[in-house]
Length: 251
Image (cartoon, rainbow, N blue to C red; front, side, top):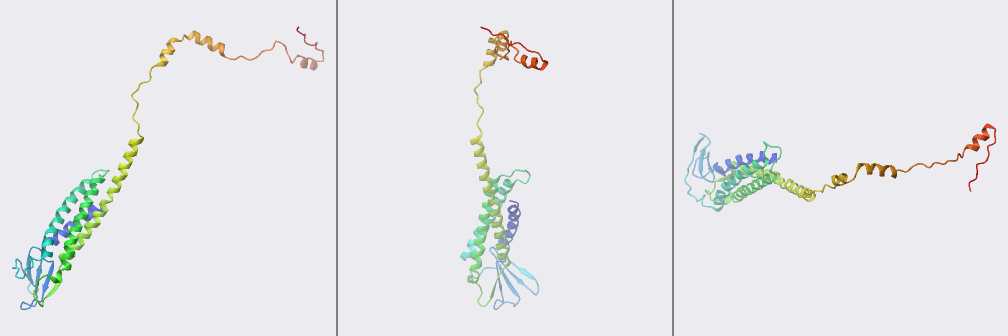
């Protein structure tokens, strides 16, 4: 998630610069113009720069119908839309990551990452389409066409947004794991019973007399067997050297 939070603002700066700067295409060596004159064409403005004097003049009139071309019109719509979605995604992702707390909100972080991913796709479509039609856009015959630095910034910003969005969308996996754990906990968490066990023990204790209990206890205890006849008397008599008469016989 930290990767998405870091790469998102970087992509915002790059795409914002790419959208506003008038340097999507450079037209140089224009026939009938100064040799060191370079015309910078963007989405909203056209500027001319003289390399020898480093003077730049903007708000050049579009005499070739550059702004009316479909790639330029589509890029004018996609780039601001990408920036708006990106700002919204960063706000949602910040609320989801919640660096000021220990537990992030994984669902919001995943939604923010999804918005960053969509923003990167929008800007990537605009930059790629313009780059593909770069040499088909109207220009003075015989001039040299080059890629402007805004396209490079647009590609970099789009890639950073896509990478950051993918890293944030992995929070959906953590969100699903949390939901499964909560569901498992609720399935095995039985609520305590509200039924009260009747107080039987005090009733039984009060109905039984302690004296009866002691008598029953004494009579119920097993006792050892005692024999009135001494069975070892013969052995003791033999040891002393005297004859011990046999035990009397009882009828």
